[in-house]
Structures are given as C-alpha cells and as structure tokens.
Length: 79
Image (cartoon, rainbow, N blue to C red; front, side):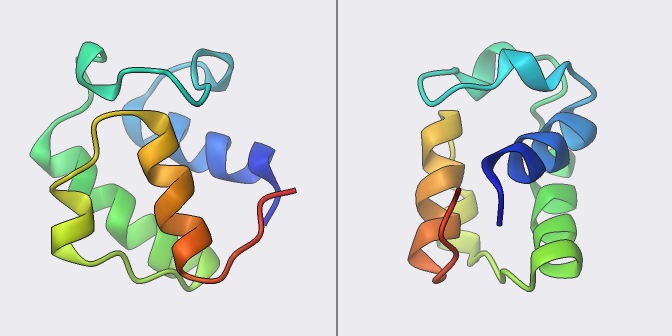
C-alpha cells in the first residue's frame, strides 16, 4: 500500500485535506475524528486494503502514526 493511498483513505473518512496528515498529526484535533469515523475507517481499510483493524487497535488511535503502525502490523508495507 502506498502511503499516499492510506492518507487519502483517512482524509476521506475525516473529510480533511490529506496534506494535513503526517506521522505526528493529532487526530483528536480534527472535528471529524469521532467514534463513527473510526468505525468507518475500520470498514474502509477492510474494504480497500483487506486490513481488519481490531477494536483494541481502533480504540488506541490518537495520532496518524498509530494508523500507520496498525497497517504495518497487518503486514502492509507503506511505500
């Protein structure tokens, strides 16, 4: 999976510009970062990249790097 693809998926879910997403980006600062958005992100990652994020992982998302780590733990290499 390309890093740009992951950024676009997350940006679409949060309804923000993908340029705002960098490893240190604090997701909690975005108004679109809600429990519904996290569930939507889980569905989108499963649908678009066959990544099944566990509820425990989803509950720990605070920064964009947390999403990157989840993707990498599920065997996807970001390029």
